[in-house]
Length: 303
Image (cartoon, rainbow, N blue to C red; front, top):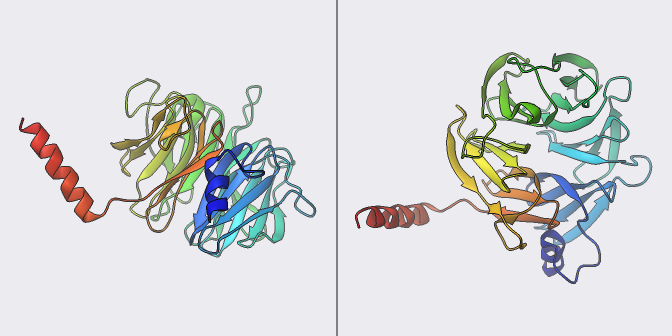
């Protein structure tokens, strides 16, 4: 386990591990991280006590893996920007199939899976010279395109360089609309619901939003690379709290280039930082810790 800790946190004496991590997904103690430089997915099996890399060789041959998501059917979906397709693996890292391809995708960067595991939502960032900024909804088994939403623009339901997506337990789909400095929410069948966020430097605003995740309660976690933090919102888009800060050292809670975020079934939060090559893990407070914190806050407020 000490080896796993060094891999995950970028310790001085590791010989391998994270080089340029991007996305993260977690299931039952297994932490899966995409690495865009090593062209692979790295698995830290915390409970099993081992480490594995997969996807760099045939038949998968990942080029630039970015987004990653795990379905309720225990399949792992990875967006490959270079090859413009989705690679699917089982949770042990065995390759299963490809979905999509260059005829459909321009620059697939993010992915989310419906709670029932039957649909995937693929964010295509397009590029600065194209209007093809879409989210495609595919059948998870056949890869058949069911429908698509978006197009470049600033209106509700349109995107400007979208990056990542996440689905909530109630099937709401959230998309990081980076160029419009907002998060947009859609129903499972692509109907626009609402958006939150705007450009700015205050809590609740964004400057360079990137990664996104939801927790079992439906709260939304948004990485902002420029701020070096993760902002947590309730399903209505109201700010609840901020995790982390921009910092020059790699100590816990400091980030220089945060990219991906995930929340597991226990409520633990996993934040990936590309610059420090680490994954920080936060556990939820116990009720006793919440009571102590509330009491301390009340005491300070009464002074």
